[in-house]
Length: 153
Image 1: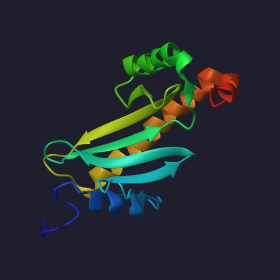
Image 2: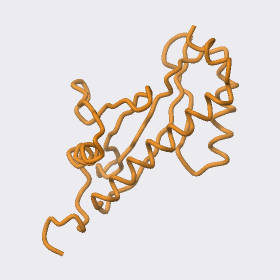
Image 3: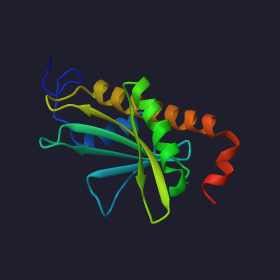
Image 4: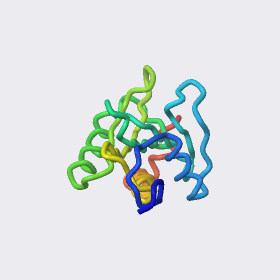
């Protein structure tokens, strides 16, 4: 293996995440307020890509569902998230209060690359994060059906 080849483990960095997104043809923007975060939209869902962990070796792909939910439905939404989390290994899904009366629903996948990563591993982590989080959002939409129209009002 030559130095710097695509078959070599290299430290995770936000620039490598940018390169992976570009390889896939995904549009993204840097967050001016948070330079450690890249933002993108997929299927009308907002996503963030960030490097976290003490050693800056964990890639987090986090998506926010495109609907907001009234806080009165918190228990119902937590039950739906818990059901998903109990039946699947990933992504982790959860509900978070975003304002006095509204909740956001999130899905995220973390990939540990503290030992370094191949370009293909970063590509796979992003693809897996996007596809599984979007699958969760689609399952929520199927479960809630006609109720979706009432969520954002």
